[in-house]
Length: 186
Image (cartoon, rainbow, N blue to C red; front, top):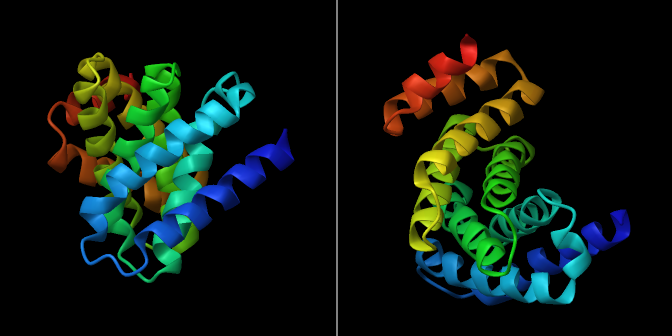
């Protein structure tokens, strides 16, 4: 299974890189590119849908690496990458929970790997996942909670400074985040 996931990450990275080269509006274009790649990947790798959060995580990892490879702003692309991934996974039969958790968690991990602000990446990924769920008719309240929890769990794996950054950014940038974060503490 690992080699299939690795091939998926590399394939997504290559697809994003080639699709975005020479494009002036990366942030606007990345949503459609990633959604098309996601739908195609799900069709080709039906086994990965059973793997839950690994599929959206692999797509986000490859897409953000592709954006970074062409020298574009990763932060300005995070929202579109996550939104395209979540929409594509959900429209292809994946669950809302797996799509949101996998995409948001990997966006936070990728932020660390690519040296970009973890709090900003968390905020943009949470916003992207909520918009995606809304656009495909899912439960936005559940998506908001899942996304915030996934961002915090990913940040915990990075360190205390990352957790503080994610909490602060989400609290100020996402409606209801403070209440969700406070309820987790209890």
